[in-house]
Image 1 (tube, helix red, strand yellow):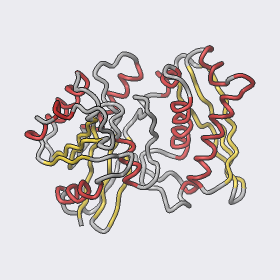
Image 2 (image 1 turned 30 degrees about the vertical axis):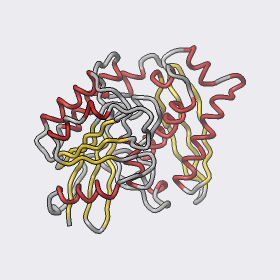
Image 3 (image 1 turned 120 degrees about the vertical axis):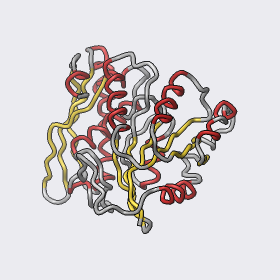
Image 4 (image 1 turned 90 degrees about the vertical axis):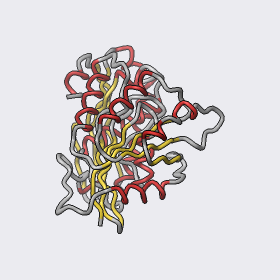
Length: 299
């Protein structure tokens, strides 16, 4: 039996979270086409007859962190990198040019003295490719795989190589700060180990809907907070949550004419929470203005 911790690293929006969700077989990290979707490292457990792997999905590293939140995301990513790990998966997107951001990530990868796997993602997209710009990496990293994280293509060879490279099972594989997404989230085949509680997980689902349903600017001025979760009997969960944004103009846009937009966001979030829990969900979702939420809630 093998056991170990695998770090997923790459620049923003290369597909690390999509890969992890599809590998685990259920959502553990939120996704959207926009960068900065993942704001803190996500830890999830993969198990089969070969052993146990804790995957650490890091936020994408920003080449130039221009605001407080981007700086905090980079900081948390570096903390995850400095943890004890056994293997590194360096993921690239061949449809994007190499740039300063990619060079920064590669510089970090080169300093990690652990076995490395290069994963070239989005091979289902062939209209535009910059793969020749990345060919030199094959001389540096001995194991190279091409996948489509979105379409779950070629996962088996990667997993086989990961288990080959991992050490033999340790007495216990502990993930610091890790817990289950509490009992209410476990009646759907049992959620994998995560370093977040139910409130954080639900807040992330709400924030994902904001990223998907709002324009380019608004998602980066918002976060979601779950204040209360109550179970009513065995089949109903009542959730009270807030979306925080930095200014009144964005609050108005999030609410929408006649409250239509916040109802739409809440409806999509409620359906996904219901799917995850197998229970009926009542979601009380409001929008508030807090210009300082980045300092308060990103620590």
